[in-house]
Image (cartoon, rainbow, N blue to C red; front, side):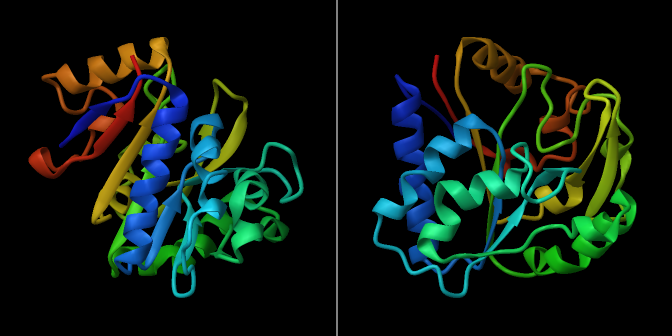
Length: 217
């Protein structure tokens, strides 16, 4: 595990964009995208870089159960931020299937290559310590036999589709993007926990091969 602290959110975004660019140039085959404002700042820098996205499969670490043109869609955010501009291949859950469980199962088949090829997973972290849509106390945290599931999040009163911990930790590299004072405190709490299963980002981790973190004070 490596923790790198930057002075500003802009510096976090620039450093993360450079790391993603390096992965693409090295031939990383799959990249799991995170939602949220911090990753979006990183994504918006990617079109400025000279990258060949052919052969890179982009997929979503989680998605809200909303139509693809909904303003809250993580896929829509990624497309607007960089995907459409660079012509990258983004695979998304099929909302037209009409049921979050069915859509999650179908998407699990789509993202299965992420388990088999060199890949990078980008993750954020909420004030409550959730990552992807693995919220504390939700059923998806205990799933070990599926790579993608529908997860009811009572705190949000909605369904989320999310990668499970086995899929997230299967990545060759995992990068957490976290900014802001409040979240810095959560990161510090996670890093110093002795109980590995007390908060989602610590569950099922790989010790010294755990996630790389980017955060600001």
